[in-house]
Image (cartoon, rainbow, N blue to C red; front, side, top):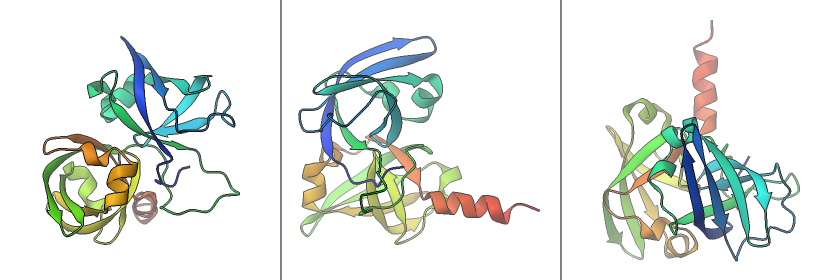
Length: 197
């Protein structure tokens, strides 16, 4: 589990794509890898990945074809920036919301503009995910826990404060950017419970 509070920005150091998935190496001078062991989970742009190799300032992970198909990883290039968060420990508090790291789909930025000191984003979402998004509810975009300002049809709005734009990769998004989207896991579980006989 994760919180959606980004701990560091990293970069894709290497990307090796093969016919059944890919191997990525992620580098960050700002993330403390001293307490990360092989087999630990790290969320990269909101996707829970398992560390298979660890160095002083990097970790390596295998990505399945399913992960490539359900996220924006197939579009990312060596040198691209990514949001990083180590898995939640029971001893730490939760500042964001509970995030599983299992991305539900890919959404798209369709508008971006200043609104006071913040930046407003309009995000187009896959039709099958709209029912899980609620006004003033939580979503996770590229691993960042955010509050939904408004929703209509297949589009929702979020306001991002300057600190979040600087501390994450969200400031790099432009109109047309594709992003990893995870909806609120409680909404998904409620639907399953209510649909059981």
